[in-house]
Image (tube, rainbow, N blue to C red; front, side):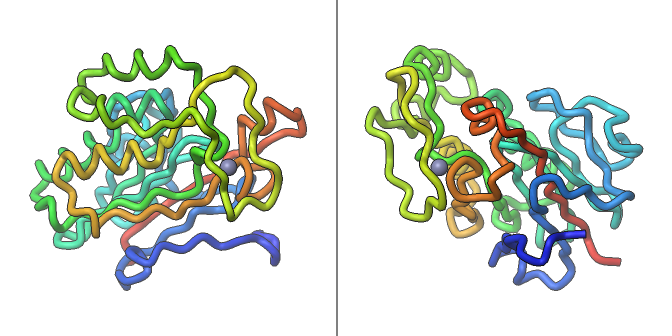
Length: 243
Ligand SMILES: [Zn+2]
């Protein structure tokens, strides 16, 4: 059961579709029993819901639904991404950390949806609670490594990072403190820019802008747990086509 005080994260793009049901669940809440999801490995592998059920049956980091079974991903600081093809009423979920996003996991899902008949302008992409640039410090050398990624070649001059830690006005607890004289990286914005560069109209993309470290539930962040050792729990995000 979801605690009465749990924050409910809603997407205005998805709420506008009466045939879609979805949740970015509170950290630690189990997914629907019938949900299909992969054994996630920070890959760019996309599964069908048949392959991904029973859950964790197959390795893969995104699931495209073949029917009304919910498709899910589990995350802590990584991006939970829910996607929809409005025309064909198809839904998908993707898990994207730094490795998966820079390998193009969400781009792979959109390409597959297009192979199944979707048009780019009919797709929607929603990025749920994930670590924000306010709390996500990377070593400087990581930027050079990212610039070598084939998928990122066109974006490498505009990779979203700053040397000054951004202030998050929505923070409900202290932001991460600098630990490695690194850079502050905006992974949700990288995912968005990749999608735009692929051809998804900007109006079809929504960021919930909830940072798992400083804004979401206290047990939602893997990185915050690595700093304070108080434990963390995974968040399941799922989406399905209503029967
Ligand atoms: Zn934050």
